[in-house]
Image (cartoon, rainbow, N blue to C red; front, side, top):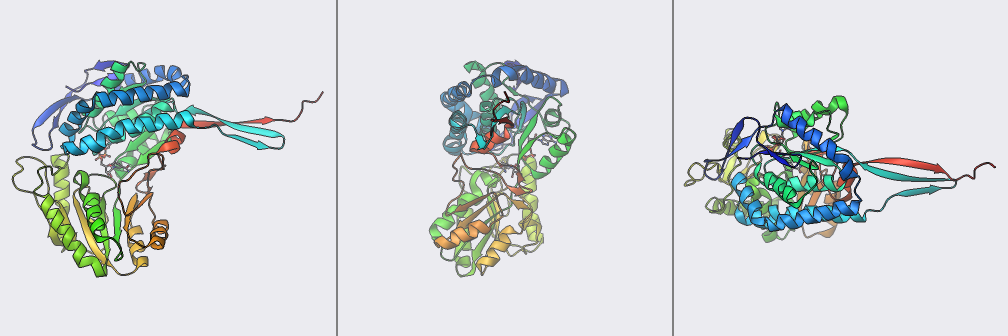
Length: 472
Ligand code: NAD
């Protein structure tokens, strides 16, 4: 039974709802849903804890983050178990990416906060400097695709900046957040500094939390339309928001690319995590001289992945049906299916779909414009660099793009012309946690990462002093 964690105590209140194992479709958890009263208690506890936590020297908060990172490593297997049970992701991926990133996130923010210099500005006769204070009580609302990685990315930065946190994990993946709360409790983190409430979004814990008057700022990762709903909900109070939202990311493969590397990179960027990563490539554009070869090799790998014992399922039956509806839509719009397009055999009641490669649709088709969030891409040829850039930029989203080329000047030229928050050249998903992360347009508001996170989770006050001698 998954409970809320409020003021250092486990709280079993509210109706319960089921959790399912995406690999089998079998019920594997019961979770309490927080109503407005439970959310209010969590926010009140956070407000009470705030002055003590914010008043600690930053070095002490950094030391807390390092202690919690150590504890994450001690509880490594519990975190892997929770993440795999909720998401059905390959154990090997949870062990090498999702769970290690939790401790790495906490350590990165511990280091950056402790070493961050203050600012001072001199002019003749004046000295100005900034005092940074925490936002206050921060609501952290996260999705289901990379639960622990995304939770720790936000919670670590918010805590080290001196905020008290109320976390709302996705209703589909509450497990690793419960282990994180247990880690905090056992480590003796002061009560109320980190609280966890469970439930759904609209009309449930997510909405009660983000609209609560005691919450000073909202950091959210999820769908673009959910971002809009949260923004409307906090508009009256003009609360600061940081949004990491959806994507419709392009991959550009130039004829001069190392084709082996480009095929291997595209396989990763399309199919990792079942394509359920905001950074996944859903639109591939390949320069005409290598188009046939590239498409054939990608389709072959996609067909092989369908038989992989570790094929990651979709998170829920509902999400599987959404992805399959795009497969049907593509066919009805006249797509050629190079690989996949259906449900793999022999997976019982698991929520699997086939890794799929489509081609032949116009750029204006919904498959080329909407985020599908599954193991699927559409691949189309292009002739000139200018055409490739224009195709990549013609999107309502602007999160990430990937370029494959051996031409150094082209790499810099195209990267600078792409309208997205992140551009990878000859790689994908490689992250330096100090760099700004986020997207343009429907892909989000603001940037997190390194000092950019600390900027969001704090408010500067500028103090200006006259240096003129006092009149005698
Ligand atoms: P979602 O928007 O459905 O849900 C995310 C979270 O918001 C959940 O905890 C949910 O309960 C909560 N929520 C839903 N409605 C709410 C409301 N009205 N008020 C408050 N909270 C509410 O997203 P999802 O389906 O869980 O995740 C997939 C989406 O996340 C994709 O669009 C993906 O691109 C995006 N994503 C973006 C990034 C990024 O960094 N840009 C990273 C990962 C995922």
